[in-house]
Length: 579
Image (cartoon, rainbow, N blue to C red):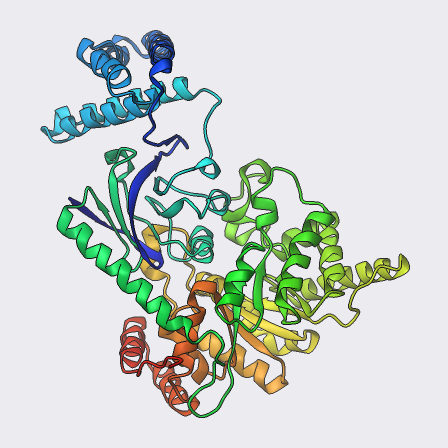
């Protein structure tokens, strides 16, 4: 049994079979072949071995010509391993006698060989890298152009990967993917956000481990503690089975709060809105008793398709959510593509600092036809219910005014063609940069509402890449600088009488609920899975007590001190249910 520590980004525990997705994107599940197909699969394996041999020989000859015999010997060693009689017999036996899929036989057998070398002395252990190289080459030739996507998963698995892009995460089939763990990634990455939205346990930033796992092996994923447990023993499996059962009981208890208001003990009504990534998630929010959707991320339209979405694609996605909410508000955030969310096929020229580059509202204002298409669909949806539009990553007053000018122009065009929309649709902006927080007293005069996006606010305030595991410990929502900018933003909005919301992972964590209420917040936008717990905390506290907690936290000068204090205050709360 091997326990590996990573970064917990989406809560929950799950037990299941591993599906390994390596750094080249190969998906190697445990799969069996029909007896009638064994000869065909053996021939395919032999062809892959022959083609891999030719590739290695070409590399050997090229290196010999360029660098000499000493370096060519590396590839000669690869050839020797590839043609090792014992290895060939094992691979053929796995297919012929065990009916293993050739890809699975290659991955399982060669990784077992690699582990043997890794346990030897340092010099010999380096041979493990040669074996992994051979494995990759064989898999490339076996799979050819038939690389399968994660969307094609058809049985319950836990995905283990070097990394997952937001688009790959968005394509996960929640019926079968029980959770995932990655070698790379940070606590505020968009991959983590998508996982939380999907409601599946996730751990990122584990470090190198994928090469040590074969598809089909048992795995435990602990999204609460940030743990991944490989080859767990029976005692550990039993322990986590009990934890799964306890989580089900807790969920049933919290479900009693669904139809009750999020009202504090001193009678202050709190609005709890849902964050959604996909139209289908609105039903999860409704079933948990949301007051509306406070953040509708629209990037999925781009991340799940190779083609730019049409106006009808947008309208269908928005209108279905508006209709499902039955008059409750929905805040649609315009395109927030760029940096780590951009699809590989549509990325612009490589940027040195993509998080500081062409993204969000900057990209929309640069790509006006794309922006206008989205705004047309949002406006058309506004005729069906309480729709509000919000611009992301606004940093200057000029950006806000330009975005509003484009919106006004689209409104005029729709009116000329007799297309219905709400001409008084509320317009808001996200506060995600220190610039926006500092200048909010100017912005506030030109918007109907604001929403503080804590994920990016933390990143830009602390100069920390939220997707980088190497600086993950510096990405901290408890940092006093972040809290003071957040407090300032809420104070400015309150003084102007403009509604304010907080979205992002901070609002979905019950550790921060009392702090946010104490800062004056009366609306939180959280993932569907967090709605019951946040509502429970709201019903267990008084605003007066929350104000004192906020004052104490804001007086502290260290993130560790703040975090310890907030955790202690959360533990002191009585449990409120609907009973």
